[in-house]
Length: 120
Image 1 (cartoon, rainbow, N blue to C red):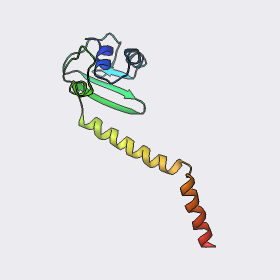
Image 2: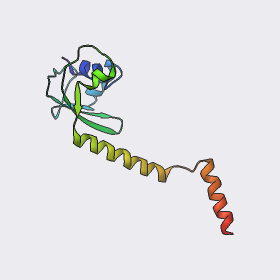
Image 3: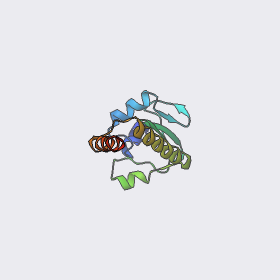
Image 4: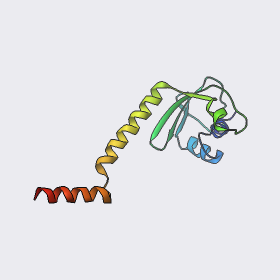
């Protein structure tokens, strides 16, 4: 089975064209090697892919010919524990950074004003 078709069938990418573009752009690696969309995949292969700012490392558990419901699609691959942990750490770090660099909203601005007025 083709790599781009498998990525689309297991719902890692919304369309097959997007899957092909990601593979050609170097965002998807098959067994630690850059590859083409036509690469044949088998059960047990390792896929490393980048989605946005996160990276996933997954192992193929089953081959799926058709795009079906999410429960069946998720049963076709298994994400490694190290990948899950690294992704969770990246999300936590991004949340901390986002909290400190974003502008205060209206409610937070009112609290700041009240605190400044209370000091004077």
